[in-house]
Length: 201
Ligand SMILES: Cc1cc2nc3c(=O)[nH]c(=O)nc-3n(C[C@H](O)[C@H](O)[C@H](O)COP(=O)(O)O)c2cc1C
Image 1: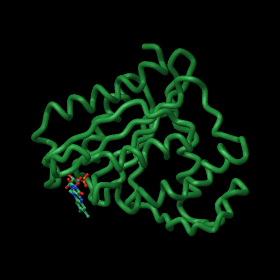
Image 2: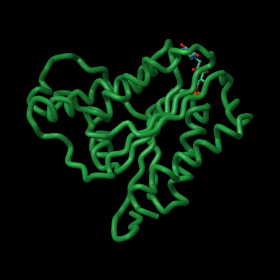
Image 3: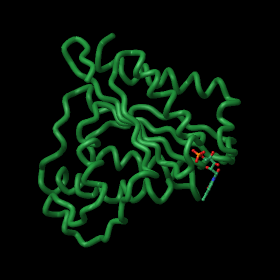
Image 4: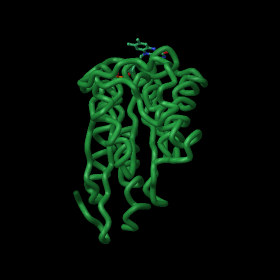
């Protein structure tokens, strides 16, 4: 892992779309590239490649553990270790896609650890940065309201602050984001800006 000023910086991006190389994933790649050029170690997790069962609502996680064994066993430690976490999502019916929502719902274990058991994920100040990239086809004022709330409370469960967002309206066809250089530039800057407060560089 890259060490800057004696500190290692891991930025993890979660591609939440089932569509590979779609608009949100291309923006995520650009954010991660911005973080990488500032010296961070970056990792992209494509949720479409993971098997995540829906939450069963069984309340077993009040114990601080999830009863289900699947790819959340791989993802959970990554969510805990990231200094900065970037969620990239298309808007599906004014919310986030099912795979991403499954990961979020399964993170109820972190909500319970933090709020019921008093054992939040231990994060240092400045290493608790959460960011959202969201893309939708239409242009309504409330297009991102549902996704923002979901991601804010997800970040809270992970002890991450909701620090940055890049919300893109009016982009639909796969890869159409390539025709929006201003959004790609904003994504690159987001990646750089995420890392600067951690490294001081
Ligand atoms: C199942 C489904 C639901 C969608 N719902 C919405 C919606 O509610 N509002 C909207 O503006 N776009 C909606 N879209 C369009 C996507 O948000 C849009 O195509 C986006 O660019 C996809 O991003 P991606 O390429 O990262 O998957 C929907 C697309 C799909 C497949």
